[in-house]
Amino acid sequence: MKKLLGIVVLGLLLLSTSANAAKVKVKEKGSNYIIIKEKRPNNTGFNPKHDPNWAIPLQQAVNEVNNYCSSKGLYGFYILARLSPTVGSHTAMDFRAAKNALWQDGRDRLFRYFCANNTDQAFSYFESDNSEKSRIKIYSGKMNAFNGWLTASSDIKQYYVKTTSPVYAKKIEEEKKKKEAKKQRNAEEKRKKKEEKRRIAEEKRKKEEEKRRIAEEKRKKEEEKQKVAEKQKEKKKKKPKIETSSEIDSSLLTIGSGSGFYINNQGYALTNNHVISICKQTIAIIEGKEILFRVLATDITNDVAVLKTDYKSRDFVKISEEGAKLGENIMAVGYPLTGKLSDSVKITKGIVSSLSGINNNIGQIQIDAALQPGNSGGPVLNEDGELVGIASAGLDKLLMAKEDSYIPENVNFAVASPIVVNILKSQKVKYTKPSFFSGSYSSTELAEYGNKSTIQLFCRNTLVAYKKLKSDNKYSTVLLDLE
Image (cartoon, rainbow, N blue to C red; front, side):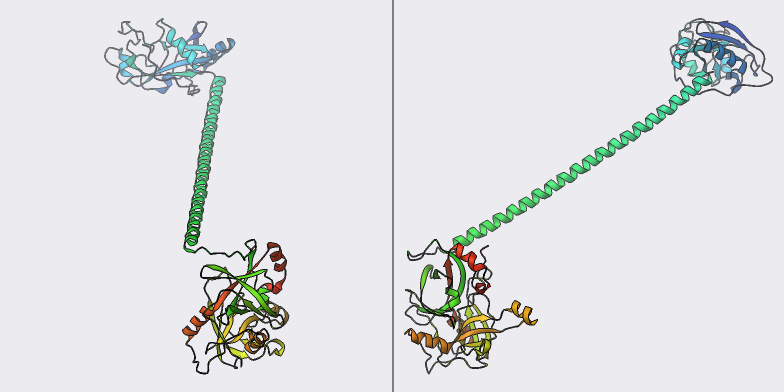
């Protein structure tokens, strides 16, 4: 019959205090039980109705149980059973009439109570007692007529273990609260662990994402680096190899650049003195070869230098002995901003703004054609293709802004051609004068003419010299940015 559907501690039930309660008499005491005769309010005898008072001990009985069990250092308990709704004809009439009713352990108003440490122990006493003291314990194999006990475990729906002791009830309630609190703590810890796990997973995801982002950036940089390397490689492939002659010192660096131009077919050329004055060697690259230009003469005052090379160009500039005319159109030819702009020649147009320069210097002309660092030494041509000046300088815009609080625009200067003629004559250098029958050029023709006769000059010197010169603003229009 070992059927137990549930053991539930529900605490103390409301105890009957009815005035109709009969005497309570202790009938038997054992080591772990006490049997008490109680006359309950329900005095129906057989076929008890669904009266909840039937399963509620009398207060006098409870007091007896608690006194007896506490003397043993134990708690009082009693057993209830709910009959099954399937109780059939094999049972006594009172059972059949009380389907689903609650019954207390005992017989003939003799109710049995157990002294135990806990509900499990109390129920084990109930289960292990084979004497026929109960109407609700299953006595397997016994004949069931009107003796009042059950023989089929299916007749009991569920057992309940109740306590008579308020101390144990309080203890169980406290334990229940502790279990609930522990359950809540465990649930909170579980939630926190889950939250921590989620946080760690999120941090891991972010780290992985950051790792991927860094890897992607690295990949892009590598890709960009590879593209740059390929471009440089392609550029090197496309760029023809430059031949160097033995007379050029390969230990020198290119520290600056400027412009120059041929004046005859004997290899003579002109530039500014400030372009070549800081150079140990001055070279130009012509037809894939480095050509050395030797300094033949210089005029520091007028900022003119006469150069000579072994290379003889068929393209050269004719020089106007009369000089520029006020207001005439001019074109400046040169190689400005080396390393920042393209390697090709640059053309700027303007007019002759004045026939004298700074402080009424008649050795200069003022022009409004734009000049940049690197233009120095290039030719300034009129519409007939005649040299009227050598591009030389412009006003220092930053200095003017600082001293006079304004920035000058399109104010540049060139060495006047009559001064150039005098220098060439003094050095007995032949030059070509314009023909009487010479005509004017279109803009494109003049640009082509200037392009063929103008050269880019590279200033070579040591690194030590470069660092020393870099600190002097005087050469800022010539020096390259090597740092």
